[in-house]
Image 1 (cartoon, helix red, strand yellow):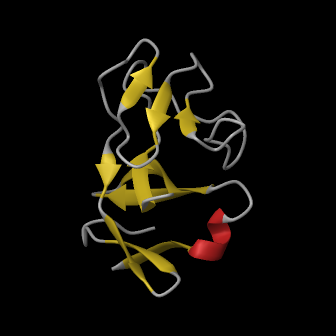
Image 2 (cartoon, helix red, strand yellow):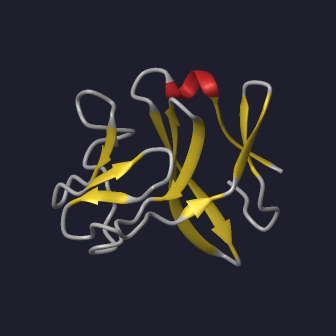
Length: 114
């Protein structure tokens, strides 16, 4: 198990960027805190495969209701990763399986390391 972040890391913006490695390939990811708990996604919009954020750890809209792609404004449900508005409506962010261990967010996939 790999620690991606701690819950306290999510307080300032609701999200935390990171990188996981799989077979020598780096994959940018982000962890988000939402009403239903914590989720992690690969940081690539399904529309253009570009990172969602333009600023460090900035993934939410102003109300922290939706994840927003800074490139074309697509809106995603933070709990499911499903696009609800924008050019990739109906598509989803690629999820990374995580679970909580106390205040730590762990990567449940043992093939990944930070």
